[in-house]
Length: 235
Image (cartoon, rainbow, N blue to C red; front, side, top):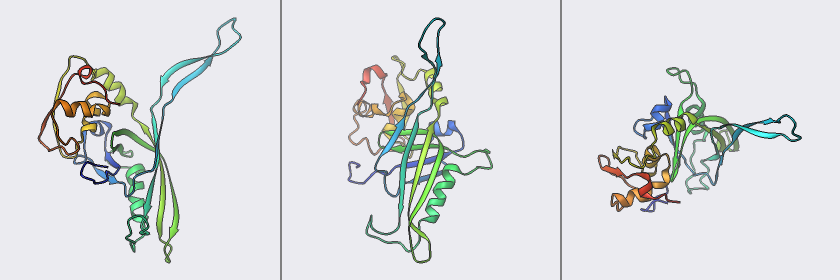
């Protein structure tokens, strides 16, 4: 819940390249989708790639580490026009909204010859990657057969290339101070993620800049992002 009482909705942004997704906000996105109803839960999975190996003269096998795999994010989106959620029933079904959501996540883009790169933003969650699974279940229908309630189950895989690039750039350098200007669509957790690689520093950055209301940033405002060791990580 935002400071002004307005419910923050999960936002999905679509970009033509991973570089655009890395630095872009809502104004630069090719398409965007705001959740009608926020997911009740979401799951993050972290995996490592290993293989079995057994040394000569040993009786047991040991797992050999190869690499860390991209994390995976999964959740369910609810589409509902019955009015049971907000008290306002709509004559139209949810098919058009569901179909637009599907095309944004998995549709082939002729210019880039691939689906969009995606960025999900919700509170402290900033996740960048691709949709790898999408299942849609239509649950209720109006008299002419149009679905009026549907559930979309989505799984995303993170872009591990961005993490490798972040390590190479050493964004957590102890002697590095960043200064950025706020652009439309920026949030403090998102800016912290882009600079430090972790959105959880937003409270420390808000204190360093004496921000009275860090949830509503004014475009054009210059913010200072201090060296990471001096900010102290927020839990």
